[in-house]
Image (cartoon, rainbow over all chains, first blue to last red; front, side, top):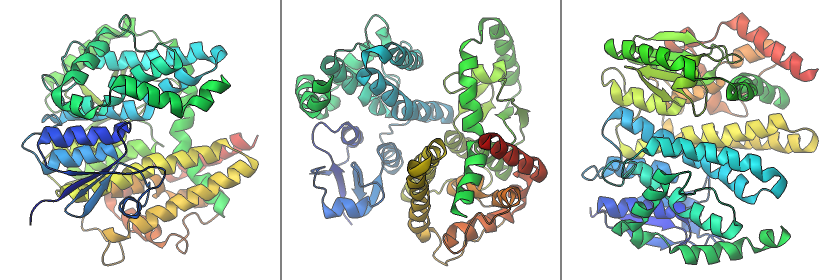
Length: 222
Length: 273
């Protein structure tokens, strides 16, 4: 049977979906992208991800897989010729640890820092910077988290590469500065410059405009 | 009855949240400088002893229990180090500086934190013995999905319920029960014959996670003099947990019964003050 791979994803600004696009392109898998209107989700999406009702969902030969980090592992295991996870179990454990750290801690703490009122901002920024420092130390002076090439953790860290820069401009709060995080900032430049990533990642200016509109009520109330 | 089931889980599962949250403030003032030479010495010693495995844990922690079950299933010899979560050791803080929590597995001097990540590491590093994760990528994705569901969505609901009161608490509790029902219905497909049954000690990733969260229901029942897991409301979870509780490896890793009962009672006593 010919392999059928479909990716139900969000529109261009939806970064979790971009993770999967990048991974599939790096792996060289042919796939069909089905864009979901997140305000009006299709019956198919709701069927394939009935628990969370979210994108991205990968459909492989009719079998659905949800949750972006779980999908990345699935891609790594199903198409092992171009693996995105390290081969060594310890390196894998570290990659998984930091990916979870980004999704479960860093993003939320940083969001708090960006949206806090002035009086609470100092503490929130301090906390976010502590977490960014931990990630900076993990990267050290490697070109990518994956070593010489983009891997699972680089793909997971797309949030750092894209969202932070956008939020900084929209909210006028500086977190990820070159002065404090030279390794991470250098990584961002290299990552967004990779051909496959460039294809998939939206332009910063476009994202900034989009987020500004999305958050206009919140910004107006500040 | 609903409240007691919830409360039991609050007590048991929240043990580590509660203790480790309180600890965070103290950790900020911990000086690491003087401990560095000691840690380096310890690491060198551990790396010299090939395949040395150390588990830093706390006796009541369901997350630590997961790792113990996995190590025992695989027949991996290990040293267990009990941590006082109100006074964490310099080793724990150096091995898990990001979260400062248990469990931490140290293998050949290399630390791994986060229980689900440790389970995956054990599965990939020790190829002998039963496989903790299925071989098929799609089956793996399914067990990872449901383990995540318990670890994230379910525990988040539980946390909300324990931190709220009045109407918000009622709403949060309803959410907790709904999540259990979602899990019950979503995992039916894992048991085509209906009843969960385990050959030998062939526990898998999701079994271990479920067992760690709900396996101690009998302790809770004694501590609170109430039925905890309702076989009518969640028959699959009930029969799944009951089947696992028969296994020697699960019995071995259960925290001491009486100690746990008084622990839960004292936790309840403190929160009612």
